[in-house]
Amino acid sequence: MSKKIKGLGDKVAEFTKATGIKTLVDKVSHLTKKPCNCDQRQETLNEWFPAKGMLKKDEYNFLVDFFKTYNNTKLDSFEQRDMIFAIYNRVNSSNQKPSNCAPCLAGIVQNLKQKLEDYAG
Image (tube, rainbow, N blue to C red; front, side):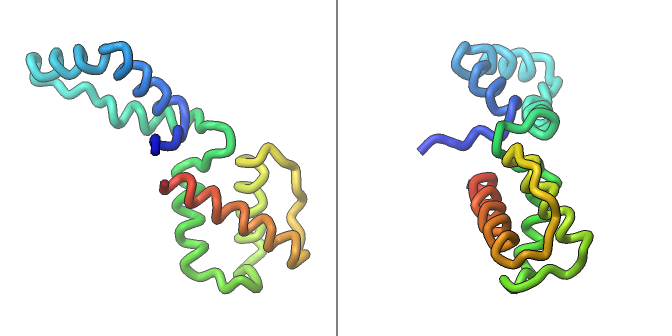
């Protein structure tokens, strides 16, 4: 199974590997004893330009913490609710208004749980 594309950084990394550019960069880096910082650049590009439907790193971290304490019934605060809806809307190109509707929230939370698994996968 291939690695899930998180953003532009992953696409650039795939391209440079497929074309042999990565091999050349690694050799030059080794010869000059200067790191290429490719991994850092890849991560930065993924954060700035995430793939459609993919979480950003800070959203991922928020959701990891959220699911550690979420009890499947209610949220801890309005701020937490608003953040959940903001992440959901960005990742799904949606415009859901924050609400306390339990069935609505359950669907959104389930969607974000899947996005979290996709990001970690």
